[in-house]
Length: 100
Image (cartoon, rainbow, N blue to C red; front, side):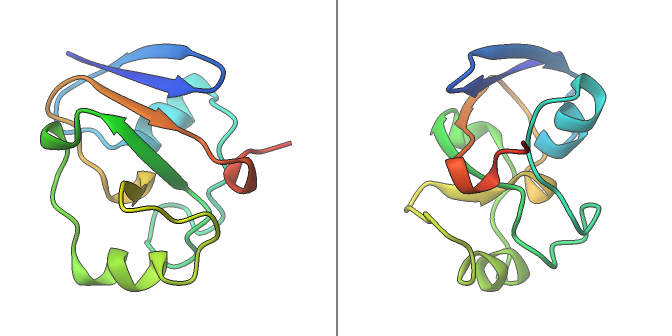
């Protein structure tokens, strides 16, 4: 099992290795937008990886292209639907990705 911590609310959850950050969001009802259902088409599940980038899958071209159209993107930005977890990670949910 791996831990995912979601900032700024400091939610800490456990997920099985190989699951995505979006899987954790859906299972634990974390307030993160994800309009396309995890198909890497909308960019609404944008998160910023604060710690543990070495424990998530590599970014593919499709994810990179989708992030080009997202708001508040940083060098540590990823799409939760594309990040398979293989260790503990800490991510920030930017204001533009928070579900209200």
